[in-house]
Length: 205
Image (cartoon, rainbow, N blue to C red; front, side, top):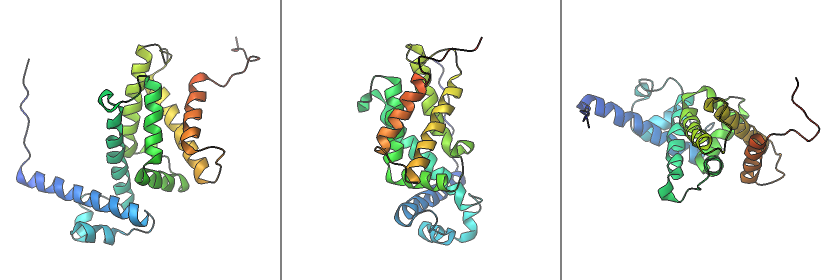
């Protein structure tokens, strides 16, 4: 086995990383307490105990902090997919569990609702990559055991699942609530993977 040398951060790099994380943590608390729209950059910098100008050394806008908060929170929730946490044996069931956890988490739910109401598509942003990567991993595992069709790119399938997920979030946010959000997500993912064709449909020749 070849051992790789782990590069340690310099004091300056470590300080910068700590400051950036302090901004993210302060923003997360304020977003949860006050809401994203009601939180100002000034409040974030005050809570993080840094100058306002320092904020812009790490983030261009308040929205950039939002995406980072979402990315970190999603990554944390994704840790529940490990077998040691009692995650379902089925990769598809694990995908549904992850999406339900993301939607039910007070912080991510609020921020996802904000993005949906603003008409933004989080998949375009780095914030969504942890979620996308986790779903790709589960899709790949599903393909390996025959639970997911193997003739499609896992990225394409994962993108479709995320698109369906955010559409359910949007409908819920706009008042369409025939079932619980968790049930809507589970049904939507099942329908996507089962297909929506009826007995009268045939593939065009």
